[in-house]
Length: 114
Image 1 (cartoon, rainbow, N blue to C red):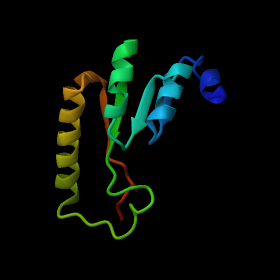
Image 2: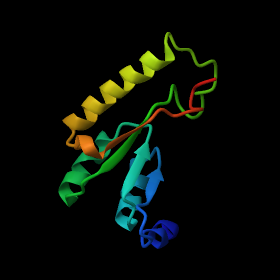
Image 3: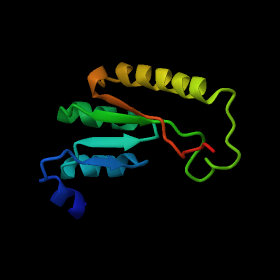
Image 4: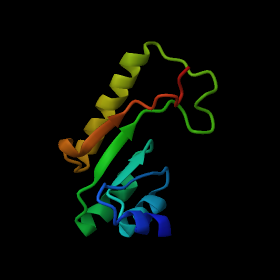
């Protein structure tokens, strides 16, 4: 976290890419402005609400997990599959209080693709 604290003072907002809610919470406390994750962020919902944090989030598509995402990734239609994923995740984010203008999408190039 010392690096996050130091970079939090630069004028450009700092984004942290993590799969772990504890790391995300620590990074936000240290000054990060955005959390990027391929994992659902429900675990952080109460923590954000209790602290009044207006979370910006990047929703990233990935087939599988970092450990297995490149093992024979298959899609019926890669564009349709990714769009369906984003439709579901955007709905989830909105239902958990993330404002639409704070949601960014990352198709995860290289994450479970050939």
